[in-house]
Length: 236
Image (cartoon, rainbow, N blue to C red):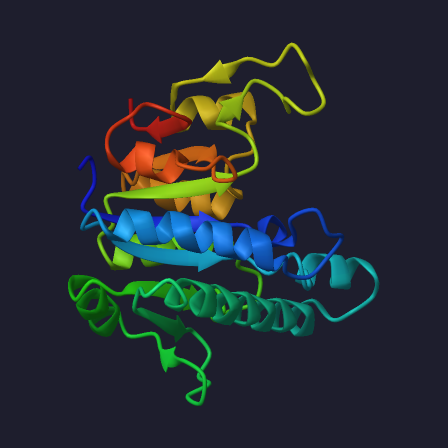
């Protein structure tokens, strides 16, 4: 395998499928099967999932809601998504653990770095909920932070496009795709890979980010076996 331990970053919106909001059980089941196939290769997998399909703190703040209150609501949304993903993965026979940055002992374990690593070593899929546990930080930043803490080899950012382009390929038909790109070039070109806090943290710790299309069946398996798909962001 190309990697031993990864952190998979999924957007909450991805769980909507073709719906306008909420969770699409079909999409959830598809992701669970992809993750199961990856686990069966011996890969250690941690996951951070957003909450944008349920609530976004920034959107709430734009409509007059207190930003801190809105961000905490967004953190709870990531826990709902984490519980849904946990249920779907365990339905395939794979053991999981949900660890959250906000204590809610009845439904999840509190995040402790050593405990998370131990779960991974035992072959369990670890899902991190509630972001960093602090307002003003996105799940992008949480994914980089957790990846660094558990010493993941790479962040795999699953999106609905097959990599990083010179422009939004859904809006600009002339956009061209990068196979590899450096952290500095991403910043200089103003490309939207992750928010600036997350991206800077990733660059400072030389943590590669690989952006790929998670909605194409088999892509996760191809990545971990070394096939070159998507776009990788590295030091070079």
